[in-house]
Length: 72
Image (tube, rainbow, N blue to C red; front, side, top):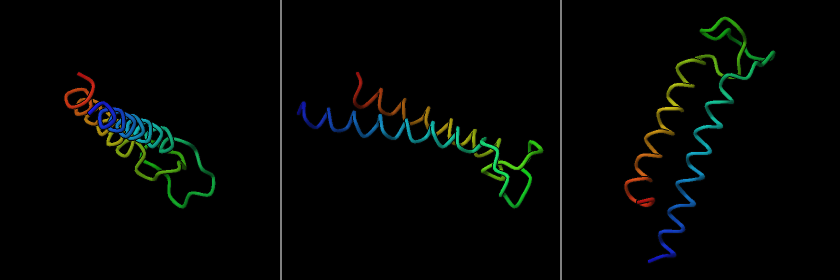
């Protein structure tokens, strides 16, 4: 049982790190981008503030699920 909990904890941690890094990557300026983002510059993601918020919300939801299921 402890091994399953450890594996689940590692998976949730990796997911949270992935969501947070996605949020950070969306705001990175990119000169080769084809469109200007909603904030007015050429970003890595053309819908930068929306994509960033979606990633942050997904990280929070993943954290709350992990806290409830694994990290009690």
